[in-house]
Length: 268
Length: 163
Ligand SMILES: [Zn+2]
Image (cartoon, rainbow over all chains, first blue to last red; front, side, top):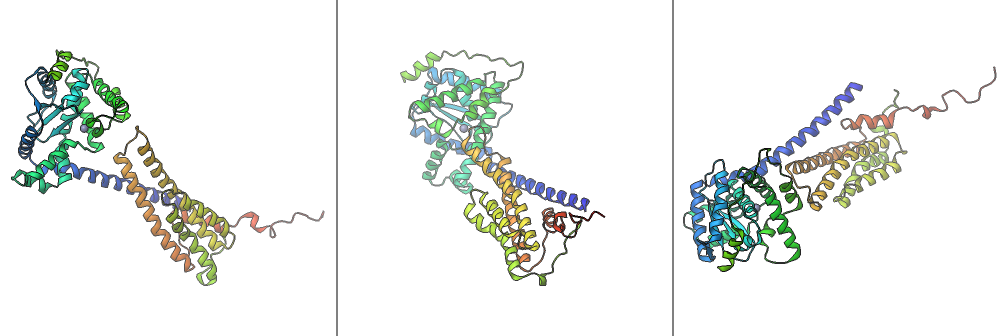
């Protein structure tokens, strides 16, 4: 009788473990299916889509080109892109003239930073943290994945083959609104921390900038787009602060005059 | 270990069968009220148990079995509730894949539990025994084992003559 009891307990535990494992794989499959969708759109198609968006943005937003701030941004971006192991994107970084504190990534590796965000940053390293995060969204193909999830794959394909231009505008809105899932944000954060380290930029700068956004959010009720769409819970700040760099890590400062960047932004 | 003999379906009164069935159905009524908080069903089962356990061994068995199985089910669901609330309230925890896997697990467990409970309720109504894995034999021991205190009359008398 004893051994039968023992056997029954084992059977029950096995059923429990099997149910849990089943649940785990089910959840894994569901969360993976989102990701896999991005492979329905090739890199070429993504670049094409990006070009369509680029033209629209060009029409809708004033951009800042060829001043000191832009040069500084390109220098920061270059350091990050060079630190990537490999990439399928030809990255482009553009400043949009707007007081909004925001940054977003459109398909094809095109990253936009609002001048409001650059004004809030006190060091080039803080801007690097934001760029690294956006590069993370691009590299992990979050942008395309979300577009497909929100607008359906057929809509994306239709736009590519010259469909309704109003759909394209709608898509751009969705891209700029920057609503990624929490998992995507975490993934982009982790990617960014690693990339910052590889680029010899202290990952602490990410914590600093996120903290700044958090504090600002408490003080004002301004147009904090980036903050709203990138909820920086204390957990994310904590993770950036506690990120362990390898032993031989040394930060290389940028040769950028940050005051001059701020001035050139104000001069525009 | 000694056990009392099991009654056969035709030896069990209709009233007993209904009470035994009620032990399992109690949970459904409770679940309907207490779904967000998986504790009311447990309380209901405990109350039902104390009201009915003395009525007969057959009822006692089914009440104990319903109550015993209620405990792990409640614990499993509570863990899901507490975990979920923690994620909602705290910055430190987030809804990981592990959490969702657990939610699926708890959901399937509860569903399975519902199914076996319905089967058990049906069997009880027919006056049959129905043993859940592990909990069935355990409940049988509790309800049918012959306890020394049960046979006071047959054991040695307290007062004995001097010779
Ligand atoms: Zn993000």
